[in-house]
Image (cartoon, one colour):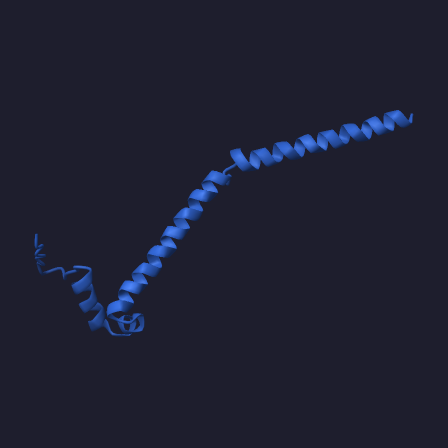
Length: 98
């Protein structure tokens, strides 16, 4: 009788272990949020955050962010000089020196 109880406990422990291992393998390799997709998304997030800080640094080199936010004439000047923006009714020619 005791052997049956011990064998039953061992069976359930093995079944639990196999189920746990299968679940972990599914989550790591086959689910929608697997490790490779997670790494790709983390890299994209890092690149976007770096791009945001680079853009803010470029803006702050010429004008402070608060100046551009509060003064529309400086914002227009910055857009024209650095981003080559234009109004709807005008043409802008960019001269490239070689």
